[in-house]
Image (cartoon, rainbow, N blue to C red; front, side, top):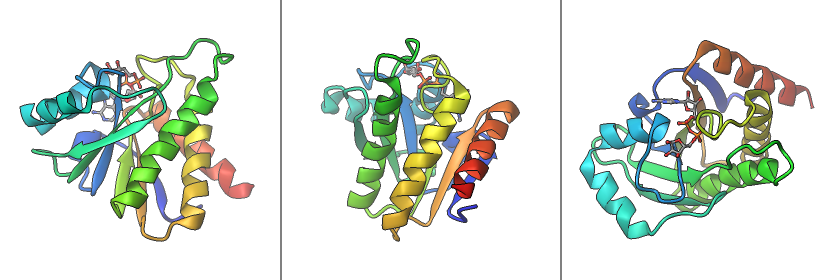
Length: 173
Ligand code: AR6
């Protein structure tokens, strides 16, 4: 298994990493789930900075400071809403990881934590989302040596098991 990728069960807002990724919406003005938790933990300055960004398209990513979070940066990305799988959802979710990782490269980020993007309010099937996540991260790590640690932070044991399964499977390929 790639030693640079790990799966944990926990709260992403508490991770001591350079950057955490937010599963945001197109407005970037906050919401529920992990987005709400990140805004609460970072404080109101995060929302102020997000207002300047003028939203974010699905599959793209924008970076802000982390304010009161342990993380220096927050990378906000917008996952697709699951609509049955024939509306380009897989590719859009893959783009979320690629866009976030492009910022990792640009900002020379060494440690990052991702939540299970799109698998909550946006309804993306967890196994499928996990497979996309590990595929894109693994691909990026093959060509990037600055990024030392990628933590996939799951909120439940069952999601954690499924991300771990996906990680083990990709290792066999
Ligand atoms: N730490 C880690 N994971 C978490 C946390 C946390 N503190 N809180 C929730 N999760 P969701 P989405 C998990 O709904 O599906 C927001 O309202 C959660 O259990 O946060 O991309 C946005 O503003 C799930 O597995 O994000 C958007 O409108 C995963 O994070 C919309 O939800 C993602 O669930 C985005 O929906």
